[in-house]
Amino acid sequence: MTEPYKGILPIAPTIFHDNGDLDLEGNRRVMDLMVDQGVDGICILANFSEQFLLTDAEREQVMHLSLEQVAGRVPVIVTTSHFSTRIAAQRAKAAADAGAKMLMMMPPYHGALLKADEQGMVEHFKQVADACGIPIILQDAPLSGVTLTVPFMIRLAKEVPLVRYFKIEVPGTANKLRALIEAGGDAVVGPFDGEEAITLMADLDAGATGTMTSAMIPDLIKPILAAHAAGDRKQAAALYAKVLPIINYENRQCGLRSAKAVMKEGGVIRSEAVRHPLTPLHPKTREGLIELARELDPLALRWGK
Image (cartoon, rainbow, N blue to C red; front, side, top):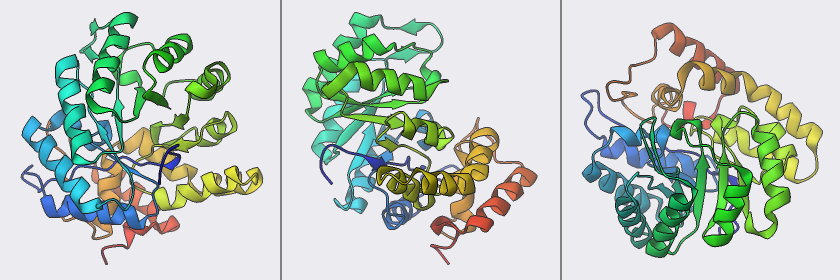
């Protein structure tokens, strides 16, 4: 797959043993599962990958392991966000040198109050782009606390042409996508839906060309994108209605723990542990998730059995 990248590019979870150590074999198995799920690409080291709970050495290990295991079967997107421009650029170069096809980055922030102004953000992304030479997807996420306006994102895309993909996951995503596409023209190569596809249909109607979900059910979400792209909105809506209950449950009840729980239930991984201070799913919450998953029979629920 070459540019423009589109379709479903899910976030890979990072797998740990029960004691919190990296499970290298588990991470390899997740890469193989995701390829078998028919994904159009795999994003690693993102927020849903618990990137904020990994050491720098572990990040390097996960990145190289993932790229080696995927072995070019699908593009791999590496998240390289950091408040420090210098560190973000170093991470970007390392990812590109290792074979990543694209980066994903949030704007620079640290906590609630340390944020760059718009000129600082342009300079930040320009230095990263100069260091890596590969496309960048800008992650517009509430987690950063940074307001990214449509005029600024278009300015960024025009001043730093490698920033040509946009993952929008804020309230009113469809309206923001529509405005971005209309105003950005050719500078906006890939407008993407985010937030586990909870607003997928509205975002596709607004012109999104892809989605970045969790790795829980991408095999069931991809046909929605295919039907919509083929002009069969009725079929896309019917397929979406079928999976929306579990998407809602994931988004509102489970978060990043959902994919791990389903993969553990399906024998893909041995442990669904998350790192403290994150906590495991409540048994009843997990039971509700698995009940919904069994009704859909996604590949993650049977791949390892």
